[in-house]
Image (cartoon, rainbow, N blue to C red):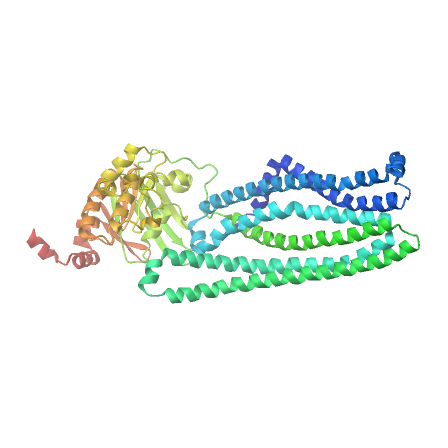
Length: 605
């Protein structure tokens, strides 16, 4: 696994998205200031009514023009000033609506972009990364973590700044009004800040463990559901239930711990705020009795003190959400910063109109542990010819296929296609020149038509039918409930093994490419299916360079070249006839598979 040393791709995506949404973001910020302003102005309605109307104290300077009106029209003055409460609420409501809508839209679009970038990036990463990673863990990063960021930005990002602005505004106004009372309020801040900081870091760590546990649950769930037939066949349902319960318990414990932290910190904030309100009421009332402050000013302080509880509690709650979001951001960033181990060269060319010549020159390879899986492998497959790879499991046959497809790069030596190093070709264009039929046929939970057309973009209906007929699949497809529009189960679970294999062959047919890779295509088939698939394979391989992994001597004997691998080395190679006459190992293998000696076979002929 390699990491980029450049600026974090995650933050590049976030910043570029916010730049693209700059006007929406700017208006949402403007709404944030409007919301804060309305919260700051609301207590002043009560102060003006009590001090300037009921107690007839001098009006503030900005209301001097209304002095006569306030003195002569007490009732109308009360109604006029009180109506500002409705105005403030209306402005705040409209601003809140606009802020929530805009921030939600930005958040949803950001999540969509991150999810798309993450999915595209995962597809670009090397096969070695995916073999090391847990599928469920990756799924939670693509879905849960992006959703967590979306929710945090949509619901809490601007809320956080609203409360910060409101809190700062209240403190400034109180200091201007009466610095002594302000000191009482400010005295509660260190404790409130300490609680918020502790809550932030404690919940972030708990959230990290929780997300990790959720990833393991998703991996276990994916593994069990994708292998449900094995689980049921071995009667391991109870065992899997217990394993799932254990993993789920870890998530439950972390969730309860987080809930406990949030509850304790919220109640602590309430208690400290209540003590502050008590102190402001007592000290402010004493100052009012001495004439040092007006009753309305005391009410403003009390209102702000009570209001301070709201932004502080909100900030504490938001800090928990942000801590979780930072965990999610870190998990997404971790994936986006992983670089593919196999990448195109800057001057790589498109692989077009290839003849299909495949050559290995002293190729060695290991999976990073220093143990060679292939060692000095050399062979050449001429265009339109067939080569069969024979060897025990672990001999390196599948690794040769992976190297041709550039899932990995050779550690030593060269692999050439049409006389050119495959590193000179763009990976995607090279793979588009290769057809594949695997032993473990992988189909998608889509229609039969879509599964066949997966081998060629924009395939026409006629091309799909022709490919199915060539693969001996058309007849059984037409017997399905909706023919080519029949939706098959995930991984083709609603079809038989032979049917799945014929659709896979049709998918290779429709590509019409010069090179073909066949990995044990006949394994596990009954006699009838084998006969039909063998016939389809014969048509598929015509005029194509074909590399066949097989244990079937009958298939191997029809190849132009047979390569025998043993512990990562090609120990013998040649035609069927040459190996029969010159290789005791191949001859013994042939006799074992066929159940006949060479003499008995000659007698039959």
